[in-house]
Length: 55
Image (cartoon, rainbow, N blue to C red; front, side, top):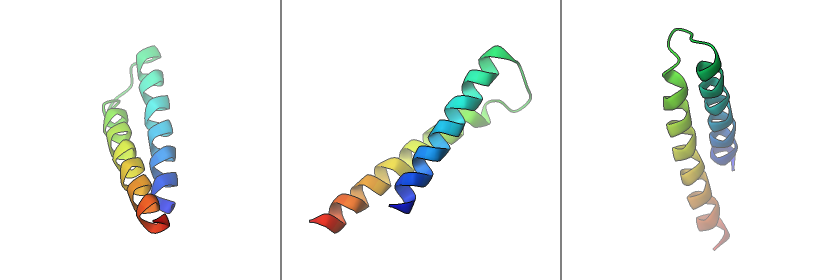
């Protein structure tokens, strides 16, 4: 469950950074894309482990 929540938070932060990067150009804004990808990976891992534990 912890991994799932971390993934959701990281994805939302990455998406917010991406939207801010569209509006205002700032250095290293590409890190937001990496945060989105890592966050979605954490969500997938968190969901899989949650389903495995409930079976």
